Amino acid sequence: MLILGIDTSCDDTSAGVMRDGREVLANVVHSQIALHHRHGGVVPELASREHLKNLIPVVEEALKTAGVDFHDLDALAVTQGPGLVGSLLVGLYYAKALALALKIPLIAVNHLEAHLLSIFLEPEVPPFPYVALTVSGGHTQLYHVRGYGDYTLLGQTVDDAAGEAFDKVAKIFGLGYPGGRVIEGLARSGDARAIRFPRAWMGKDSLNFSFSGLKTAVLLQHRRWIETPEAERTLSLADLAAAFQEAVVDVLVQKTLAAVERTGVSAAAVAGGVACNGHLRARMSATAKEEKGIAVFYPRPAYCTDNGAMIALTGYRRFLKGETAGLDVDARSKFPMGDLMGVRPMNCMDREIRVR
Image (cartoon, rainbow, N blue to C red; front, top):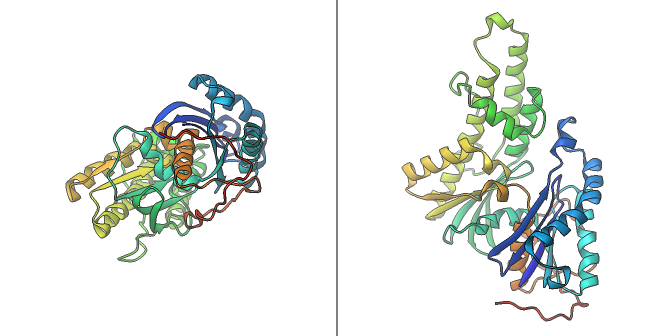
């Protein structure tokens, strides 16, 4: 079974082709970083226009890389939400038109579930049940994953997501967008112990996250740093970056391990754009092994950021449950994972689907 997955949820235009929910034949991503860098963040209107320009070439490149044609496709999966509504509409309406023209099923995918399942694009995967941390620019959430489509939300951010905090701190430092990469690079030459920023633990038993207070603390410290004559400074900008990164990573690691202990699972997974952070991976793996004796799994960086392959995989899993979408399906800028059920089948599809 061949599925084309399309994602235009934010500022990456991506398409992936997958066979039988196991083999990735193509994963093409067109980044808009150069466009949004000078603005210090994603400009929704510009992102939508770029998707309009790039989507068809990206899909065609994905099919060419996979060595297949439009008429070889058995189904089409596309992100319905959450995300920027203008960006979502570009991918969703293109996918609806393509599915109608090819007379193949359309599967509307929740972007958060796709990140959650992205670990299954790898050859080594965690055994069910496990704890998953999805951490990106828009979301920071902990799930108890019992199986495909069987998730329990354990905790989430009450304000800024971790990736959003990285972006905002990078902007405070005048380092541009995206922030995760530049902060991690700067932090390598800094001393994380030079200053201690606050951690928001949200109560003894809470698995929720909060990073807005940390962001404010960094802002105030940076202002003091700017106002201090250079010859009198005891901290470097790299020290501030390292201390900030350490505070974020510390909370992510401790909350994830608390979720592991609470659920009694034997494995954990970390996914989403912030999962590319090398310091987070090193701390999470070392602490999990030392304190809990468990293994932590990560998708490769190309599958941590937004990509069409994870949309195709999630679409395949939803299709096996008989969940396809009608042509009246619309974009959802907010799409909680709890709203995944109740998608009705598309009545114009008459093509036989080969599922092995």
